[in-house]
Amino acid sequence: NLKQMNKKWNHRFGGYDKPIKIMQDAGIMIYGTFVFGYDQDTVEAFDESVQFAIAHKFFLANFNPLTPTPKAPLMDRLREEGRLLHDKWWLDPDYKYGHATFHPRGMSADELTEGCYRARSKFYEYSSIAKRIWDPRTSLRSPYRAAFYTAVNLVSRKEIHSKQDLGLGAPTPLEIPQGT
Image (cartoon, rainbow, N blue to C red; front, top):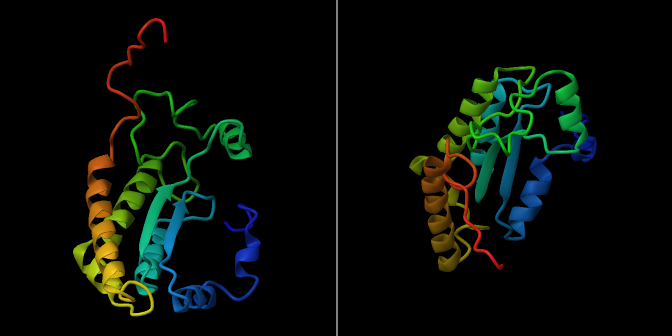
């Protein structure tokens, strides 16, 4: 997957553990972003990624389906391969936030949607939030950081469940006043 993303350099220095430790030793709270649906991904990738993010005490994390964008080579390739669920997902009234926009190779589109939602939910469980805060180098470096960590994680937890399955845009077309 990293080769497909032109990110094979990510493992050039032996993986992620050492850079994560260096950043956290410097007091940096890490926001990890995980994208699923690449050709080599399987349903096992969701749980492995969540476990990795929790074990490394990430401050925040997001777990999203790969989403092709207009004019990008990925969009062109998926269109050519007949794998798009919506030709223009961003304009399709049936598209919902957090849902897959194409048929991945290693799982179904529904498995991609459900896996990302499950990963987000698991990362922001109360037990995970409580486990990840216990790091004196980052989250517990000061009372301010501990309060900030707690507040942001609780807001993120709430947002996950309120945004999933929402349509894009306003429920009705916006009226633009004449003369503007």
